[in-house]
Length: 336
Image (cartoon, rainbow, N blue to C red; front, side, top):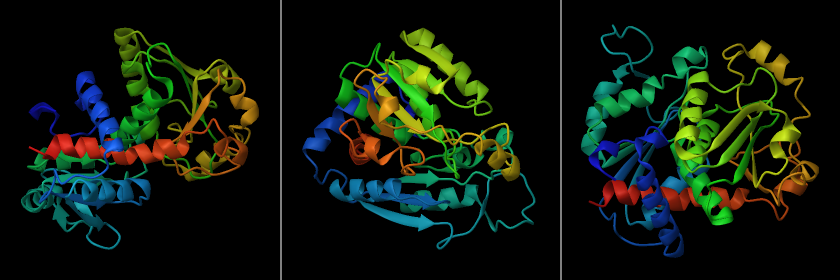
């Protein structure tokens, strides 16, 4: 990984050859769990919202590589931070990211940040102002642990799992399927997976109800990636059309960007989508289709028990690969 990829805000901060090298290292580290290559190194983990897999896998990754983590959560350990430059700080935030980043850079060798989107206007949140402010002001590598727009760590684990399951990815068919949930996630994991899959030449269909279209700029970039790497993208198809003939079905719930910030309208729109669920009947339409989901997953609402616990499911393997791919990333960022 070269100096130009010092921060990882989105997967496109790495070249495809860098991603290939990282995934190859991930497989080697999966077979050889522990080493002391990062002895004496420390990563600061800053969570402005909750985490289970990301926090645990990051802490385990550093421990298995001989390093340490300092884990801070906004609810318990620190306060709101101002991200805007030149502002008069007379609001709730008592400290600017510029100052926090400078000081934290003296204490740790890298910073991993999970920001909290404001959740009021997509035009604002999609700019990922918080994580980009940390990257601008920090003097150590900054890793995005899921912003409003991107989740590169999940995409690395996803591609690792796809390669383990399918081998060569070019030409393989991936169905990304919206699933019903009372508390949808941001589209970050789907955005990152979409771009990663198309960089590897996959044929991707995105299925979702009306009003749940992905960000227009993300889709525009995705079409460019498909053209450049021999992939194919169809977005907005129906559930069965997306899954029919697919090698992998990837379930995920995400917010409607049309109703973003309006909880009442968003709930009303979701109430009409309860049939958007993955089960064995749907998976049977694929070509020996594997099942993936970034988790957490609402059983028997997003995906049936039978599908999640069945032989097609890769969800636990996918979650485990967060550990190995993050170990590889930390190794490449910090061992020198």
